[in-house]
Length: 371
Image 1 (spheres, rainbow, N blue to C red):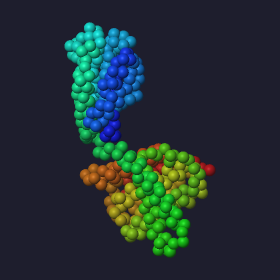
Image 2: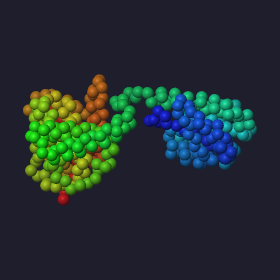
Image 3: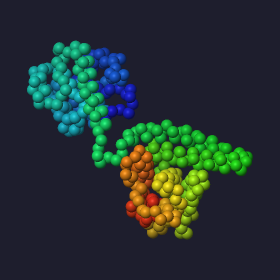
Image 4: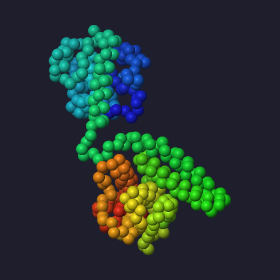
């Protein structure tokens, strides 16, 4: 596969039982670059060592392979392992042999899927460099074509790694900005300034939430805590109130009476999940008033948050699988997938509008423990 970095080294696996061959190869490629990317040589001194490396390293571009090692045909067995056992048709293979009689060139090229055949006795540095460049260029073209190929069943055109990195880059800035807003709220500000700072803080909280979803590093959010879920829901509402006031719609919430004062659950993860869930519903509500309902199913030990329209005569529609006609819909689909991943990691179930009532937009059910 193509590395996520433009200047990542080309990985070449050198498989030979002669130490001197490894040393000469390193001398030839010392300081050499192809397309502004350096060459990284990885050494294996036996077929078995090469198998172990190939199983655990998925971005090797090229194998420089000896024929005679543990056995007279160990190199040929390794070719079969790469192509048939691993099923790797992309990696380029250059056979280098000091014993042409054990593996005649014509027979090997016909019978084995290799990309070049070199005799050590006749091999010069320039000939090896030329062969390697041709092989790397071929590998580059294969991987580029595979990377750009569109799968008709795949509705996600984005490279998830780009969004993961974007989330990692923005999250520290959003977290620090939220921290500074919290400090401002402790100061003796005028009522108007205090309201502005609270609005700023809510926007920063939502930005931090988006960064966490983009990063998709949800493991730290799994930690169980004894939590008052009413406080979590209040945090979600407070984060959305400035937008509601500015756009003129209502955000109501209802908590059923049987909800215990405290539950054991992944508090931070739940708060981020509920906020993301409500924001996703807002993207489709189009200014319609919303209601959040918090329901506790005591026999099942499940907590459910339902996001519904209030007093709406709008027809039901599915917001979990956008039609994919615009970039905005593509991004909303990505957002939904991220919410679903977080919900599943917390042991819950995300329910789209197609499974609910006409006014229900989204809901999620989460397992909890009573105190």
